[in-house]
Length: 164
Picture 1 (cartoon, rainbow, N blue to C red):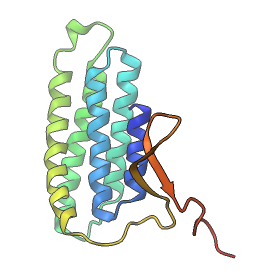
Picture 2: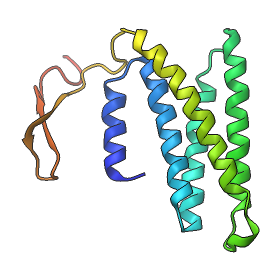
Picture 3: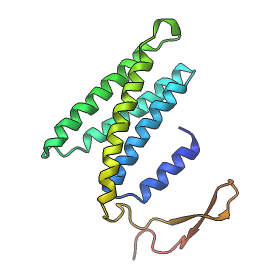
Picture 4: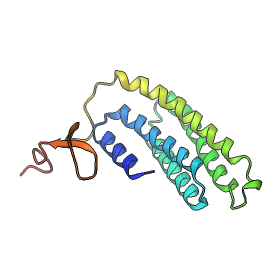
């Protein structure tokens, strides 16, 4: 994942409510899988798959099993995790012997994309407040920073941290 992607995900997380956070987490897993599919270096490939697996583990650990749908989501997450592990072990330095890993990654990406679409539709109806409080509000397009991004942070010191 590139530095710009990390910054974008960090900003989205800081502004997200509960259901938006699930959508963002699924986006992260999908991005790691896409990055792995594009990687030529096997070490970077495996690192991206480890990161994708960690994201799936986070989704699994956040399930509330008191709901019926949670057990179904658990099953889907376990299939995705199994495919990620299998894809990681199938790819070796010698590409000719690892024909099936790309199909596994495409299946993972397809399953996660379908889940993401569902959670995105649910997130449209969730009007709860963002989970993180006291975060900076960023308005894009107002000024250009040294890094080339177009953003300005307003009230940079207002109401941040602990109140004494």
